[in-house]
Length: 291
Image (cartoon, rainbow, N blue to C red; front, side):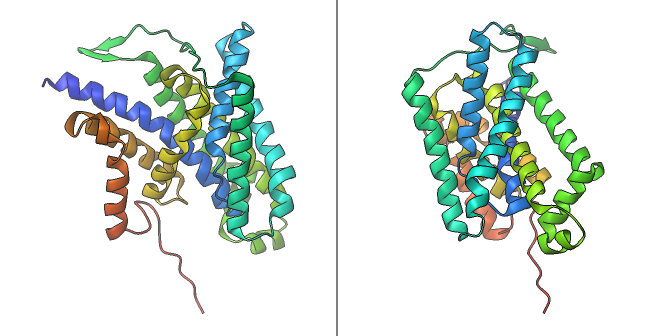
């Protein structure tokens, strides 16, 4: 097969992996800040996709739609954290995990009641005409997904490095008690973490909608997001991004080597093999407890 064919596969794999990376980021951020594993994050992506659908049917321009999806995600994140997660913050971790799972089911059920299981199409912001560079045909929507993922990752890196709230969030992730003694409002940091997480999740739903369509099963993205997060180290921002890209590439190239039937198994098999030799993922590290 020609080299251009593999280049096109690589681009497709990176664009799919970019979506997985966003979902992984949306999982990792609240986990780092508050220790809560949000199993409802997939449905936040679904909510973002349906929000885009409603706004598109209203005739709004894509930049306005994107902005409103981001705002909606942030509001949903704040509401969930304040009204549903914070009251049970002292409960056992497993209880909180089940609560997030229930929140996701509630969102999915509400969507199914109103829209059913119908799949809706959503046009990409730059149409469907391929971009051809050096004989390689690239979908403009795929390029847009990659661009947005890179932009979001860079913004997060700058936020955590330079912004006061970002530094406080890093401090809370390391030691909440010490951060509190230093004057950091931990509850406010948790609220920020959930808002950012839901914003990224809703953005992932907006970006993936033109590729897979809009239906209640968009939330299944969380399975690949979890694999990407674990592969990268689960508490690592850069690990989540790299893990997502790796999962996307594995799936794409597996589709032509082992067939579409088994391609979905490939990332899980690779993950299990990796964890045998590196239990903390690519960028994870063993916790050291001094006594």
